[in-house]
Amino acid sequence: MTATSHLLASGPGWRVRDIICTAGPDDRAFEEQHSHCCIAAVTSGSFSYRSAQGAALLAPGALLLGNQGACFECGHEHAAGDRCLAFQFDPAYLEDILAGVPSVRRLAFSRAHLPPSPALADLMAETATSGGGAAAYEELAVRLAGAVAATLADEPPATAAPTARDTSRITRALRCIEARSEETLSLTQLAREAAMSPYHFLRTFKALIGMTPHRFLLRTRLHRSALLLRGSEHGVAQIAFDCGFGDLSTFNRHFRLAMGKSPSAYRASQGRRSA
Image (tube, rainbow, N blue to C red):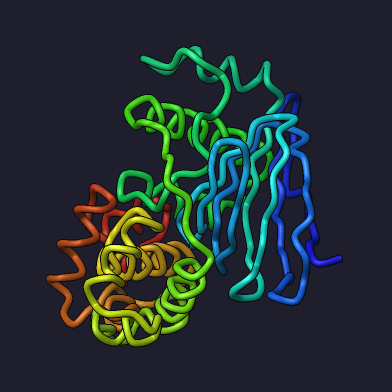
């Protein structure tokens, strides 16, 4: 078995699973089928995902979307392992959620994924650290489904599929950012990691991931800082520097733009005191 699934919480019409995959380039991808409507938040690693709605390279912060009964493949042709938090819904339960979302007229997901999004940054951080029991997970599941539906209502379906060569090269850069996000990583360095020219790397990265390398690096740092604000006793300044921000004012500005509040206010809203 290359994947293990641990049920975190469930209720009538919904369930949340922590899925850890250890597959790598030597493991063959198998066709699988979604047993439920699924929204899976990628929390670490990267992998390719193919379904009838399209193909994508999924990185931390991305959301995998699956329709009940749909066949799909996940592959690790270019790097080993990933971890996802999978929210699974019965169609009737999901339909009840979507009925309250303006402009949403269909139950089925029209896209295979959603790229990392600043608009969903706070929700993604909460998703990665949730541990408040069934009631908390159910509320999070409803919020996530509503946010995804609202986002899809405003976006056209994706059509372009990544090539294997591009996916392999961008994966190397993604893993570099994930492992060394606290370091100063220039476009030239990341392009060199991907063995691409800076211009081609920038264009390809944005096409595959949905944002530029700098925005993804910033999102990775902010996500890590949100987790530390939620789960550690470190001071705000220490967290800023540990996550790769050169000064506190820059960290405060970016965090407020992404999360809608200052780091201290964000920590306080989670019931923790700022140091």
